[in-house]
Length: 94
Image (spheres, rainbow, N blue to C red):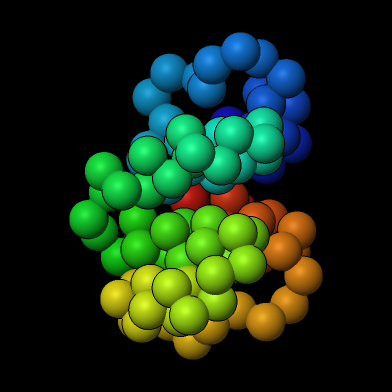
């Protein structure tokens, strides 16, 4: 699956089978279901899970919490547009 197909898949009711937890997190967030996206992020205890968790808290506006998750992921906090971060993360994990 490429980024275009991934974006298009958000028109469905459920994410495509076989998506990793980070991609499921991004998928649900793109659908506007922050709560479900956060539930996916909380299940993933990897660095990839931490970076999407950071992104979610940035979306939420909780920058302090986001910074903690960026630290757990071993990455500097993102400062650019949220849409650019979503695209970069989705591209990285596809």
